[in-house]
Length: 563
Ligand SMILES: [Fe+2]
Image (tube, rainbow, N blue to C red):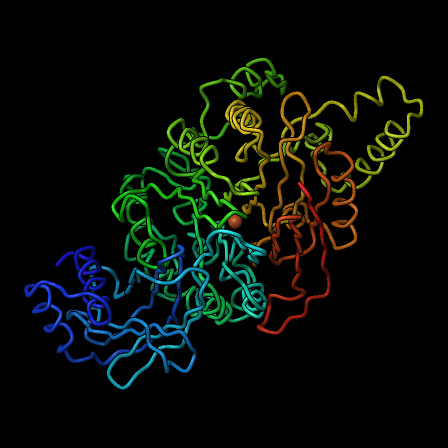
């Protein structure tokens, strides 16, 4: 039996116990499964729920078994109370090595805006209990969501997840990608791993390429207690970024994929298979399709559109180095500008963009929220900052530029040369929306024509950002909130800034980047969004330690957006 037919059958058999009569063929099959003895297994990777709808939820677990060549049978229960006195649905599920002993059940016919509890049972074993909630319908007063991204196991403990799990009344967790990283021990962000007890397993310490590699990487990550706690606390709505496949993935390759690592699409298929196995997600076109973009409606309050800016349609990132003359060291600005502004350059791609426009058109919700990976705010920095080959000079350059910018903003006299220093700008990250300006403008145009505004949430950079989205005419079309990474190092790491310098840099960037309102370059953490009809309150919660499981929230920042 294929997984999907097994799942459909389970839906039917579970429902049949409580609600409807079913055909004798299905009843016979259900009897067979119900009579199957439970297997001797362990639940080492916790439980999870995800992709809540107003009437359905995915619930997930993984069985660890010593008998890897055999199918295992697990029972599951979903109740309206944490003591399981009132069991609403129950059933048995089988899994095997063809899906890495993961178990995913799409529990249907549930009530809207309702809290449920679920657990799995093996022979003499029981999983932890998970809490989930279906989406509300009609008039909705408030929704609370945690927004997370970029958890790198060897870089530290997932204390941001631990803290998010402690938040009361979480409706959902948005995971914006980089749930895992593909690098080997000795690679990116692994330098502290041995000291803090976060090495990768010996049989998974290389760069991950095969299906078996990806599966083992998820298994390591899912031993983190913070991640297990957050999965058990609230349903995830997840999308991938690049590292679920490999660094700087685009539609036909990636920065971190070389020919000696085999066929890119084979690697991508393995990565996607493992992602679908390990995440509580309901891919809209089924688990054989890389199409992940989908919408979630929270009554009349929010339409949440989860986007894919990585796998389906992204054109290869531009690189400044391709436009630099090796002899003269001069940049071919005209050719760069022509390529950057090419109207055919795609990030979402036409199909996804049309789907998004149509979804926003159909929605009557107050807030149109885009859950996606890379920064959409125009992040253009004075070119002079890039051209510093000696990084130690950057703080002094920033100081000078800030002084000029402050004078400009105060209408004080500045020289033409000074003005040129703060107005000669370039996008700092061509992997973000800044590398795809024509499509960004097309999206802004559609949204403006619909008389709606965007609320974008982003991850990817490992730092916190709050920007105003402005179209080519400089008109506001919405706002962006970006979450810091859970553990992955941010800009302060690349620029080797100490805490004081990182704070100075953050203040400077907020002033020098026209559309940026706030940023933080010193902390790991996450965002908490409290959304009502009147406003969106974003709380950035910063973790003071990732080198052990103990931590404090020592810094926070809040912004209130009223639309
Ligand atoms: Fe990341």
